[in-house]
Amino acid sequence: MELMSKCDHHQTCINDALTQAEALCQKRGVRLTPLRKRVLEAIWQNHEAVKAYELIHQLSNENHTLKPPTVYRSLEFLMAQGLIHRIESLNAYIGCNRPTEQHEPQLLICDTCGSVQEINVPEARRALDDAARKAGFEVKNRTIEIHGTCQNCTKNKKAK
Image (cartoon, rainbow, N blue to C red; front, top):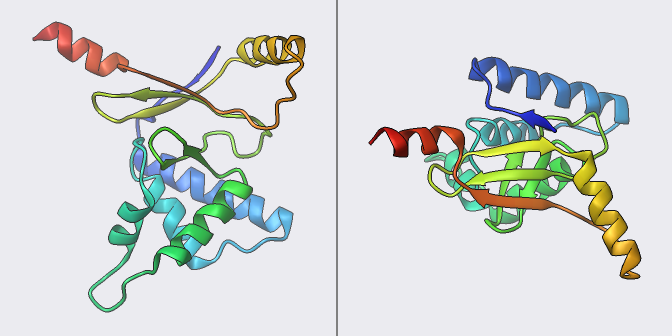
């Protein structure tokens, strides 16, 4: 199992995500517009899921309020490029730690602090594929979301 954990130097994490996004978009011949870049940067501000309306509020200012369709189009672009993942159970978004790899997200979601970690367990994917195939089911899309308590919250709970 490969764990994509929280970074120790968060600004470096944000900068790396933006640098990777710019390189990937250039390589693919698609535009990472200033708004798309701002949305991606806002998503990477922490390792918690961010809802679209939180992004609208965060990215708007007193002179200009972003319209929901504008932000949703940016989110759709970023998902299509593999730069972010949608967390279905929370109707929210998180930055992808592995945008250069084609993969289906496996997410650990802390119900206490809201942090989200992406993990990579190829054996789980294979087991699910085998079970689906035996059931005669054709898998088209798969996101695994596991809710629980993260290591930090568990430690804090035990320390009290």
